[in-house]
Length: 120
Image (tube, rainbow, N blue to C red; front, side, top):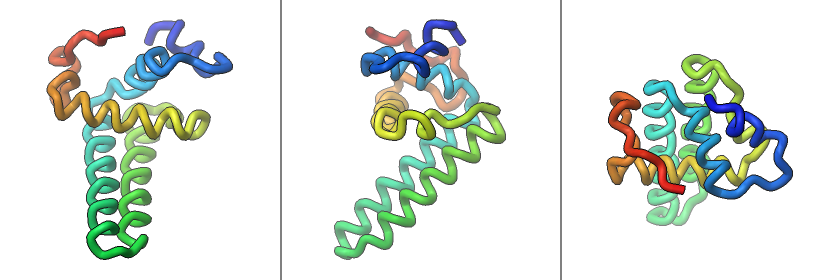
């Protein structure tokens, strides 16, 4: 990881792009990315079921499953602390940006060599 991205944790208010670059640097391990993708999917499924049933329970379960996947991936695969501990809202937004980048083919869940260059 590049030192400028590591310094993001000391910045008062990093730009969204700089934070996202930092966020992606914290998600290099493919198992971590896959678990994040699965967790975000659980969260979205929980949201959809909550809307359909008009009950908050599926959303709460989806969020819990999503964070469980993410935290397990960081502690066991990335061996780092989740960014959500320090930057909960920016991390939440970046997680869905990463999810979108995977769906659009900009980020790989197989090998980082298939990632497309990031645009600033």
